[in-house]
Amino acid sequence: MNGAQLQHALRAGKQVYGTLVTSTSPKWPAVIGNLGMDFVFIDTENVAIDRQQVSWMCRTFAAMNLCPIVRIPAPDPYHACMMFDAGASGIVAPYVETVEEVKALRGAAKLAPLKGRRLQRIINADEQCRPELQKYLDEKNHGKLLIVNIESLPALEALDDILSVPQLDAILIGPHDLSCSLGVPAQYDHPTYLAAVREIIHKARAAGVAAGIHNTYTLEHSIKWAQEGANLLIHSGDIMVFSRQLKKELDAIKQALEPGITLQKSKRIEI
Image (tube, rainbow, N blue to C red; front, top):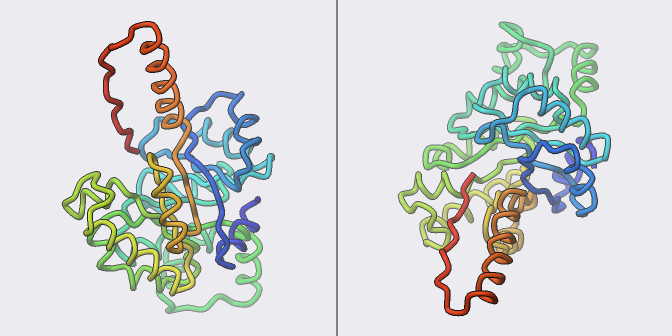
């Protein structure tokens, strides 16, 4: 899918599938392209990938009709503009907690190249775009996706206002950060966490905004939240799958060669 197709699918309530890609190897796109996904999730908040590498990744995946969605380092409209210029079809803004942050990000995703005072007046609904300008902005920003991370208690408390911002395409739950903010770190079956995720998904979908979650570890949780209404599904990631599968195979080799060996318990990878 390209950005416009992914956007249309999300607005129609369809489920779309992707995974986190951290590897910058030039061999990786060919592998990813055979997995039947709709988009790739590239994280520049927690992963050390520079702007040039991100641009090569975005433009390569886009040429393969895999929509590149990039998480920027902070909920900053200037970072968002940089990633769109680099070739991203969509951005995810991390740890958003206020409606003002979402409005500013809307300016970067939906109203570029407007900046400064005029952009602020339009964002605040103090000024309306003339038809010719509006037509240009719509064409210029066609297919650009605006997605924000909901991953804290303040974000949950401000969710109704956040969901009211025009042209917000999706919210994405960050399980690890959300669980920590709720006081139940990495306890993904805790009633408090489950209730919060369920509330976020249901409110977003009721507001006509797509809802997603990035499950890095368990297949069961990806299925569970999809069944509850999440339709932007980011399952696991290259580094997580590599870690789990290689650990499994090495353990099998060790047990075959050294019966009775005590195996080290694998650690959960959180991004």
